[in-house]
Image 1 (cartoon, rainbow, N blue to C red):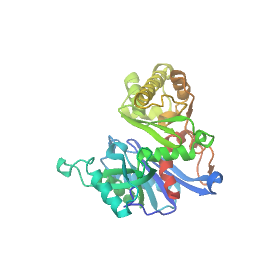
Image 2 (cartoon, one colour):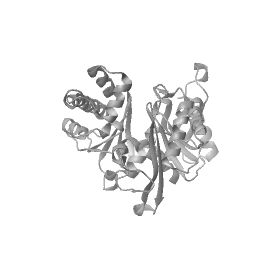
Image 3 (cartoon, helix red, strand yellow):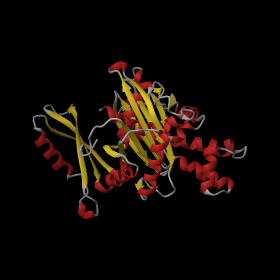
Image 4 (cartoon, rainbow, N blue to C red):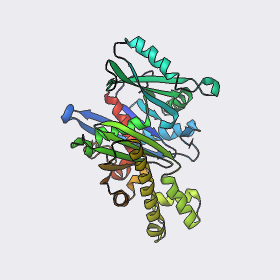
Length: 362
């Protein structure tokens, strides 16, 4: 959404960088409005060497760039442009009001002046911030005013991601924020939003390796988002390591490929599912505490953890809310070149990459 990088090019791939993997998605689109149809042209997931990303900060751009280059080659994409995202916790987002009669130049100057109130000073050791803004529409509370969303992110956060793209032979067309990419994928691609969910509060829980995000969407607008750290799929790896006395690397491999003892499901995985459900319940309670719309009509699980068999049932029982697993490709076709054997398993983890890939159609 940072238009200093926004040179819309097609084809374009969405590239999602997390603590443990890098993901790529390329989409094409036909039709308009209710006749819009998407096709998955290419996708892939590549694990990252340990320590490449630490607490969402890039620590080894070279290794990540090499992993992305491998992913570009194996996916078969011909795209040279990419949409990437910065983590929500490295960005500042605010909605402010401005006079609707302002010219574009006046509005930009006003936004920059107001943004300075919220952006940490460079004297505090922060790099120069990059700023962009987007007009949301007329302000409901202030007649004659408009609501404007501004987003700021430190320059070094953006440059580190551009460096990764450069290594892989890609150019940055769009820089977005992860939570907005996730929101876009949900609204545009999930079944529940295609079948009259306008009067419902839909919660999406994106459970990654070490970070869990909750967003709540009502009338196709995000009304709540919260990011929680230090809980995610990596906790299951630690549980396996502790229970069976193996190295963290062997625990991760066993989690992904199987071969664990017979008591794994009942003694380790079942407890982890319960822990996930409890974390989701805590996150939903935060929404209830901070919002007058004190109900969730439907819960969607996304992220790599969401593909754990039976997790949706455990969560639904605990929260007493209808719960499904995200599949952004449920209504999309798949290009013949795409190896789709594991697509159903991978789909929940691709939501942010899908949201970024959708920027090709802005």
